[in-house]
Image (cartoon, rainbow, N blue to C red; front, side):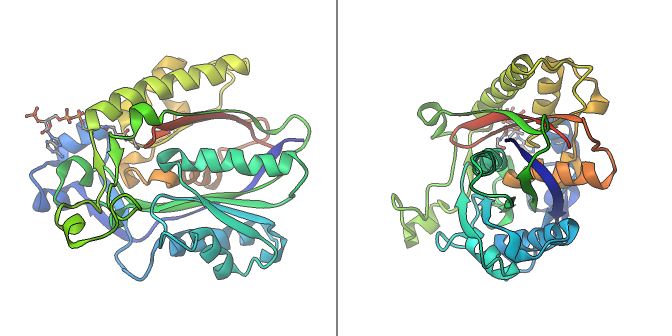
Length: 328
Ligand code: UT7
C-alpha cells in the first residue's frame, strides 16, 4: 500500500520585504539579488507573537477544511522545521493543540531545507505499514527569526512561510511511488549552520555578541554541492522510475536559488514550463518551499489524476533527496 496526498494548503504572512527594502539596510542591490538568486521579495511575519507554530497552525486548519474531516481523525502530525517556537516542546505538539487533534501523536523533524521531503517519506512509512490512515505533514520556517539582517550574504535569501499536506492510503498504482534520501554530515556540517543555542554553545552574552544565534552559510560551497546533488538525484529518480522529459508533468524543486533550479531542470531535459518556481515572490522558506509549490499547483488546477511529479531538495546537513509522486 502506498501513501497519497489528499489535501494541500499553504500560509504566507502578509509582510513583504522587497529587494529595494534590503537596499536600504545593506550594501546590495535589486539587480544583483535578482540575477544571482532569482528573488525579488520575500514574506515576513512581523508580529513577534506569531512563531512557526502559528504559521503551521494556519496550514493545519486549512488542511482539515479542505479535506472536510475533524481534527480528531488525524493520527499523526509531523512538522518539518529548523525554526521551532522553542527547542521543546515540539512545534508539532503546539500545532496539535491549536487544532485539537486529540487522537494524534506528534513530533518535529529537522532536515533543514530537505525537511518536508524527509517528513513526507517518514509519514508515508506509517501509511504503507498500515499503522495509520491519516497523517498531517507540514513544513514551515520563520526564517526571519534566525536571519542576520546585517549579513548581506544570507539576509537576501530567506523568507517566512509554511505549507503542508494530508497523507492517506493511495489507490493502487498512485501516490508516493519512490523516494531516495541522502545525508552527508562529514562534508556538510560546517558550511550551513547556526552554532548558538544548542548544547554545544548554549546561549550566553558571548554567543549573542558573536552573532552565533543567526544562520551562517558559505554560499559558494553550498551552491556547488546543491547543484550537483539536486541534478544527480533528479536524474536518479527519473532513471529508477522510467521517467523522461515527456512523461514528467512537474518538477517541484526546493527554492534556494533560481540558478540551482535551472541547472536541475537542464540535467533532466525539462522545458521551463514544467518547472515550478515561485522563488521570486517568497525567497527560500526552507522546509516550506516544496509544499508551498504543491499548494499553489493545486490552487491553480494544475494537478490531475496521473500527473507525474518529481520533487528534489538540498539543505543543511548536508541533506538532500528526491521523490516521485503519481497524483491520484
Ligand atoms: O537552501 C539551502 C541551500 N542553500 C543554497 O542552496 C544557497 C546556495 N548558495 C547561493 O545561492 C549563492 O552562493 C549565493 C546567492 C549565496 C551567493 O551567490 P554567488 O554567485 O555564489 O556569489 P558570491 O558569494 O561568489 O559573491 C560574489 C560577489 C562577492 O564580491 P567579490 O568578492 O566578487 O567582490 C560578494 O562579496 O558578490 C558579493 N556579494 C554581494 N553583492 C551584492 C555577496 N552578496 C551580495 C549581495 N549584494 N547580497
